[in-house]
Length: 114
Image 1 (cartoon, rainbow, N blue to C red):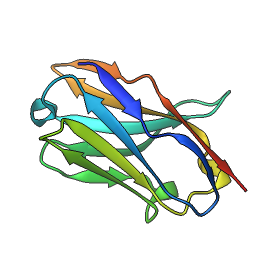
Image 2 (image 1 turned 180 degrees about the vertical axis):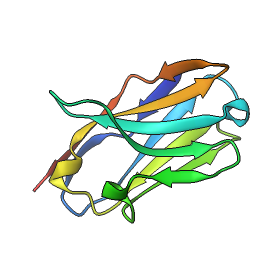
Image 3 (image 1 turned 45 degrees about the vertical axis):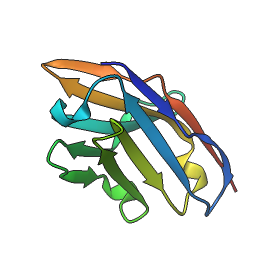
C-alpha cells in the first residue's frame, strides 16, 4: 500500500488545515489508518486513528481541535485540524496496517506561526 500525504503548509495560530492521505488501494479493506506527527529529536507520536468501520480515536492533546475521517470512494483519509497552535508544528505522517504489514506515507510539514 502506497500512501501519499498532502495538505501541509504554513499557517498562523488559530487557523485550520486539512491533511489528506491518499492510498494506492481501496481503504475499505484496510483495518486501521492513522495520522502521526514528529518533530526533530522526538519520537513519532500518534495523533488520530480510524478503523474500517469508522471508529475514531483522537489523542487528548488535540482532542476537540483535530478530527479524522475517511472517504472510501476516494480512498483517502483526512486529518482536519482547527485552532492550530505553534506546538502543532511537525511533520505529519499517515500510516496504515494491512495484512500484518505497516505502511507509512512520506510526511507533510505543518508549520504554525505565533
